[in-house]
Image (cartoon, rainbow, N blue to C red; front, side, top):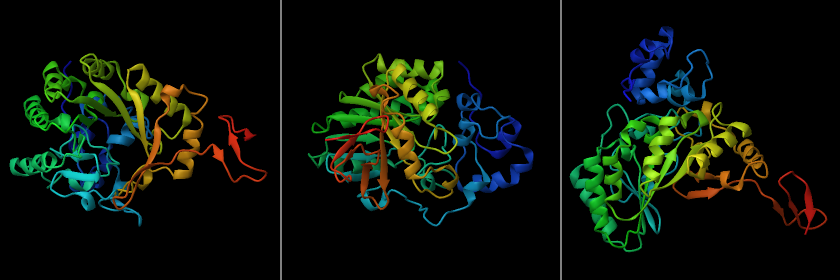
Length: 346
């Protein structure tokens, strides 16, 4: 299926009818700092008549991005503090993040790495930097899993993905390869048989985590792209970010999780939005997020329950922050709460 070219400038958005001409100057200021990229698949889902369209909120730039809140930081989850080498983050003992590219098929308006992608930023690791990162992994037998992220690793060509997968295959103590991507949803035509073969060249246990935030993103084309991966033996997981106006509603979130499961994707993480610059208008308070997640339990299949997580600023790691049901210090003695909010004495 032929798609329109990716829209990368305010002028292109105006021409496509996705932004009013009156906002062009303001959006040029946004684009001078943060990358714009709206694929044909994503653009086709946007309703230009809806100012709160949940797909538009994720991908179309807004002037609000130029306003930085006091709690926001260029590196909100502390990647730099845990980066021993360019393109590598080693936060946990048994796994590393490897970022072979800083390019994405689409650019999210809430990206926590937005200061490292886009205008004036490096597109990819140099060959020397990639050699050094792989040597670091090879020298540390405790590293059991390598997570390819970025950028979006599936924005790379099948040839480059296969070359990297084969180099990882040569590191015996690495047993698991995980890939974080938006591509099956935002550019499903990229999931070709050649790309699937390239991913599987590592001969490791292979997991692909799909980032999607609204059920409309799981179009028939996106589901078919995921099926090409799953039918080839790839295990797929989901990653979503809780976003104001996108999925901060229990019914929408339930529909999203059901859509994942129907696509044979296991719901994995629901992320609290990170305090990246210019993203305050999209973040949901943690207490509100906990209540939204609480309303999934008991109302939606256990297959559809993601883990709600928060990345502690400063590089201190990711922890679950979902609702509590056990209350050991409740007045009158320990009790447990059922999914409908009724307490029962233990």
